[in-house]
Amino acid sequence: MKILLVAVNAKFIHTNLAVHSLKSFSGKYKEHISIVQYSINHTNEEILRGIFREKADVVAFSCYIWNIGMISSIIKSLRKVQPQVKIWFGGPEVSYNPKDCLLKYKELDGIVVGEGEQTFYELIEYYLGAGKEVEDIRGIAFKDSARRHSSASKNEETTLATPARGFLSLDDIPFAYNDMESLSNKIIYYESTRGCPYSCSYCLSSAQRGVRYRRIDLVKAELKTFLDYKVPQVKFVDRTFNCDKEHAMEIWRFIREYDNGITNFHFEITADLLSEEELDILMSLRPGLVQLEIGVQTTNPDTMKAIKRKVDFYKLAANVRRIKDAHNIHQHLDLIAGLPLEDYSSFEKSFSDVYRLKPDQLQLGFLKVLKGSIIEEECKDYGIAYNNEPPYEVLYTNHLSYDEIIELKGICDMVEVYYNSGQFAYSMEFLEHYFDSPMKLYASLYRFYDKKGIYTLAHSRMRRYENLLKIF
Image (cartoon, rainbow, N blue to C red; front, top):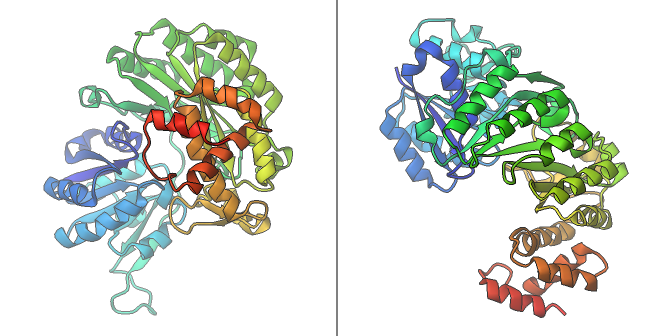
């Protein structure tokens, strides 16, 4: 019996924490499990060929909004070339409505719902004939051709869902990465917590409150492994890394003490929570040791209230400035367009508020209406229309038209080219004085590119400079 875990990552350099954690948790059954990782830049044919050559009896895919389209296409062909293979899905993209997914994807045999380690372990036992019957495994949905409703047609399969599984202690999950040699020059994803104390309505964490922590001595031992192997970057996937002050400071002190001069650590934080002690530690770190991602999303108070988000922007801004003045930490600040009650002019103000903090990177994202999030149920209240296909991105709202969304996407691209690239810093700082707001500068650039029909073309750096001169 061979079981294949398949990850299709957003980039080649990424690792998939989920598949590594599932294999690590499988204990004595590890010899039956193989992992293959691809990226969305591979072709469907390349992925299909690789999976087929593994000759697995069970193939399980890790599913997210960025790869579900590819995976759903691949399994159609996989079922044809390996008719007897068992195909399973898991991950956030299929956990909210597993029965619907089973009906949508006829090639599927089942879905692991939610947190997967213990569930997948019992699924392995089932296929090896060493454990429970499939219907006794908590946290799955599956097709059962042997159990038909009396009203079902001859060829119709019944979909069954078992009761939800409770949460594991993170201390019971073994270290995910047992073969560090195979992960050289990769970005390593790591978690020291699961869950989030907040209930932002656009986030999947809004469906479940509470945070679980991995024991700090385990965390330190695992981080030491990454440092010893001199991996280029470790990205913590903790939803709000600094929601517990002592936990955050322990880890920051540890990586300061064992800094190898190479490894960079990425943390997603809420900057307005930072205390003086935390700021002191952060500002004492080697330049390049840490980078911070800070989700601002909006500075509109009414919008923040609508999305159940509490942020003290004035404190956040003060802390961002203090960190910036220390010149040792890369800061990446995020905004989301298409949130409830935020129109074009309100987003322009949010843009200005964040832009004036001069982050190293300013990321303009667009609302994605994720399955199972609170905001999915509130779309009618705010007139939010979104794409039916992943990544379920906003098309328009009661406050933001599709025309304005199109323009904001153009502004986003101009920010990537002229701000986030870092290649035009002095030019943009000079040009800002000629516009009423920073966003108007980037809007002017987008309109120029669009009007001239050069928006979708590739440009040299020199041509980008020449285009700057032409917007006046």
